[in-house]
Length: 442
Image (cartoon, rainbow, N blue to C red; front, side, top):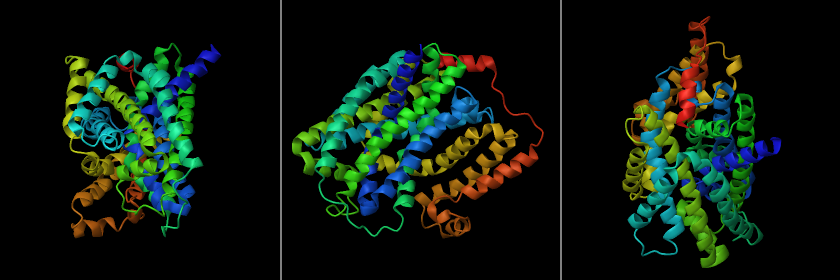
């Protein structure tokens, strides 16, 4: 039984890795390496913190308080879970992560080798495969962890080992003031913190489906996270180094997709591009299948199972097709202001979930989320209207605003104020029948 338990947690951990690794994530580490140059180790550590550890901490936060993200978000309000998931499922999941996965597959995996193939054709085929794999939600984790991820890792290993053994150049001095801080903020754009929270129910639910009790599921959730962290850092760290080796060759403003394709072409030629293409296609496909399953599973429950699961999956794939055709950069530009609001709230919830036993009441959650959300809304507005000088002056008053963390101090203040106001009130406890219903959904 013990051997089977560890085998299952490794499979589930690889499934979590394959879901977090993909979409735009493949293109961020080389870019971080490019601007970090000789300081690439600090860049890799910044990426490790916000691009790898933080998303897994979100899974652990859910695991710490229950079995589903609603068990964590219920501390803010019973309706907060539905609001958060509705925004993440529609605006981020279907509007960004899914189409970005398809667009990245085309721009890195297909276009460099077959420039005459139109992007719409590749994107349609991509979502046809997503629909095929994601429709059987009971076997999604096994498909990801047992089959697709090992193939992905083999393809990546060939490319990454070649990139380290025969680098395109040597890390150069780039003049960057803080490689760690810049990488920290760049890794924000991976969006994996939202994945960690949204996919937690699927991961923990799959352990429950395999027959493990609550205590075993909790232990398995932590092991799953460690497997994911190890695999992600091995890949991301190597990609960061490969990008740093190109810092004396490629301009700092080189487009993300062009940078990765160019480096691999320099290292391995057309064969390298073919291997990269296969790795990219699998990385993006596994992400899209994992996120698609999570999003549609939520919507299926939100509509009280009145709309068939396969119909919702078809709608998600069609939206992905239309959004994906616009290209990676347009999708990133579209989702940035949404991330600027959602991400601080996710960080606050994650930290409080990890420290839940020390949180006296739900007012701490409520006050912290409220003030973090209000302040981060200002950053979101400035991202689309940088000329709003009045608002910029207000945002500059907050500590750490220049680093993108203007919300941090207000979040702490909100936690203290909320805790005082709600002193003596009981904390949220999910109903057992609600937990059982959610387990049945995943």
